[in-house]
Length: 131
Length: 108
Image 1 (cartoon, each protein chain N blue to C red):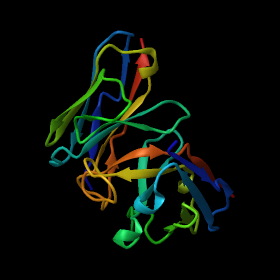
Image 2: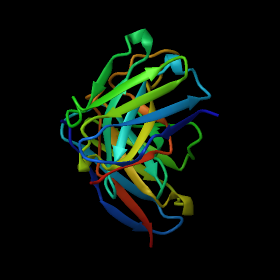
Image 3: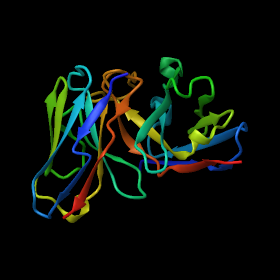
Image 4: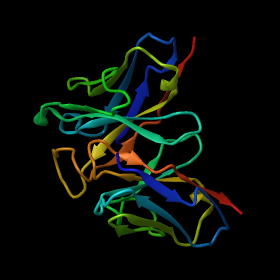
């Protein structure tokens, strides 16, 4: 089964850092980009950022709202993606989802760009920022 | 940023009904529009991608249409498991994608 499992959520204090992990299985992690989204309590979905596969330089992209504080990385050998959150803010309180971005009508290793959608989602991990 | 607006924000319907949810983009996005379903306490799941392509495993009672700035998700013959929140998402401005605010579909 294709699966993504997030971990690392919990309570965090404002100004501190937190690292979330996303462990993948059932598909070729090396050929896939990975993305993170979040959902604040009772709110809608917000895209946080993504990392492309190594074939495309492993480049990262971030939402303007988190750029400079969030860092996405990946460990190809362990099939894990990471989201580091620095300088935690109360507004970072949310469920964080790890997702697999997919290009429509593209087979194999695809450059994540216009038209992509999220075809595999983890169950999410909750981050609560409170003093 | 491209703004996505869904209507209605909430909707009450009965099992067996046909319902439609509209998603409008603040600028033209071609057919780079995807639909997701989210049940309480669960992660979203993709239903439709590229405006009208049905994701594998999704029942055929779900369909999507539209292009440019207006898109529609239609559910033909509602089933009990369809009561959930639905989100549209544009990927024209990828990688920075945006979602609609959601439409909550409730049982009448």
